[in-house]
Image (cartoon, rainbow, N blue to C red; front, side, top):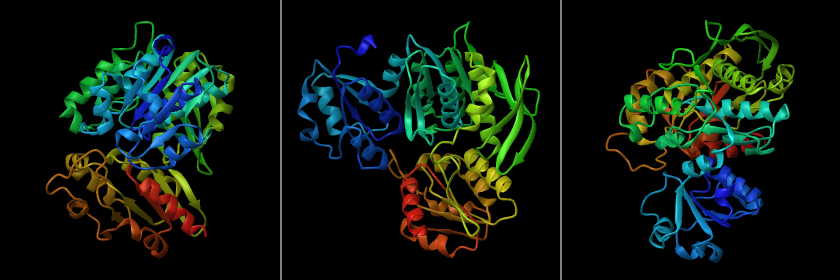
Length: 449
């Protein structure tokens, strides 16, 4: 890490973000002085504080610890999601600090180290976590930056050595173009982030540009059917790497992996949903190409517990199944629906969804309506704005009107517990990328009393 050897202090604006907090943890592990700002406290920021990282929640200059006012020895890292009128950001800008985007810093860390990167509008977080787990469990000296909290380690970073890096390659704001991947995978390229890209064609171009970063002696894996050239991945099709002989037993997939040179038998993926089986195939293919011993893969995959808020069972009894999922795109909701129908066949399902971003709700309204209409009962929360201001006419009530399901209604955060207590559905799925993830923690506690 020669490029950071003269930097002793790192201050993060937006430290509570999943990618930002992983970087903060990384530098904290190196013995650097780390602190940061975030708008609101969260489970993640409170965890950072227990690890010795100071976090402030008031956007004022006197909230910045004095040690970070040393311009020469400090680096300011920010997420592009912060508003440009943020006071601390503008102070550092005015005082001529070194200021870099999160993605640039991640690119600097990985440059010069053999890097495996997973990109895609869906599936990248779980795939990255499985891949990192496979490498760690089979003895690789790996550092991994994850876009979610791995249930195995209760963290979004693996610090197991510096011989190889595993990173989630984020397409938001074209962040992944800062990376230098030796082995890369693209799991999906559905239209998303149109507030950044403008149209689907520009998003596709960005993924094409990412694919071009893989050197000639590297390897690019792609989900079969994507408009790119690479080694293909799929389920029971003609892909170069594919799952065959699939059976479902006790909620787990049992399968064989067909590769270009051999068949690896008796693998087990304990994550529900065909999308997660696809994620496992991708991670296995990347690990094999990296050189992971074939004999160790079955055990490593079997022990993977999943990623928090990716079809996470919060309650699983005969009376009620409560599932938490980060799904915030129509394709992700469709994947959750497929998984819940496969794993809980014949049971009535209540879907509670909190739309994320006004622009995304507007851009994919018809697709959201189609995917949500399939559930037995639908409840919508207000749109979580995140970084956006309201858009005239774009509301959850507007989206609700488009859902073709007679059993639908709006719901507030305060009504969640009573709604779930009184539902006649045996399975409840709570979905969204906003603060519904915090709300379900309280709901779970109350239901378990």
